[in-house]
Length: 326
Image 1 (cartoon, rainbow, N blue to C red):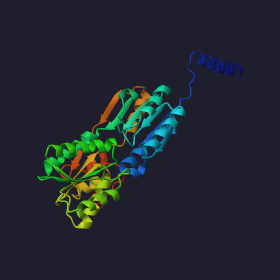
Image 2: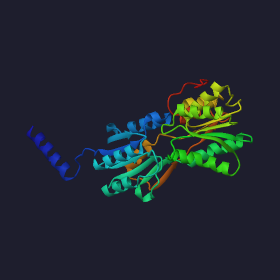
Image 3: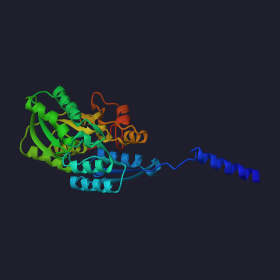
């Protein structure tokens, strides 16, 4: 017994001297500034993804603030910096006004990673940005309109939160096409700061009441496309694959993709909310890129969509093949 005890003591000493003692892994402190899940199905999936990946079980001490108010977002970010987080992850409600926050993070030695949305600032004020190319998404949708709708192409544009990177990017190619005389934006409205289905419905109701002639609904998320269709149905206006008015949404909610598959809508543009795993890999590896990293995204329409696409790329619950969500 004495020999066994002596052996254990010697092993302990040797392991300490040789640096072989296993230290507890360091918990990584992360502050996440995001928008509220109520904004859209896309945002709901994004918030859930962040919570699942940046968890205690995965080695993180993380807190997430969800608000569509830019001032509240900035206040939360400053709070995280004061709390001494290692990383600050930001999806900004509005692209402007963030310089003071970013400079404070830099002074405090906090690594800033933008996700989902870019910020109008000098690129030296953040380490990396993992985002969807909102302009490219808008270009996909605009090109689809130009290729699949005969002139005159009269469009109702339903924007998201004005000034957000998503709204600015998705609007720009359509506005450019109008400036080039390729289409007409006959009504221009917004779903507001929450990208609201109800506000989108009111936009289309107002266009109908004003007697506007249109054949395209360009709604910058799936919920607003849904609201637009409710207004069209109430007015007895045919739409979708066999109708006069073509419907385009964004985000790849599975209900929206099933609507496209059924011909109730015409096309939907992908915006991938699952960014947390990539950011987690960057942090854990210590190899965080510098600058903007764009996700690859696609558009699907009634001719190209399959069940495999919906299973692989769709977000949120699947209502099932043939089920139309009105």
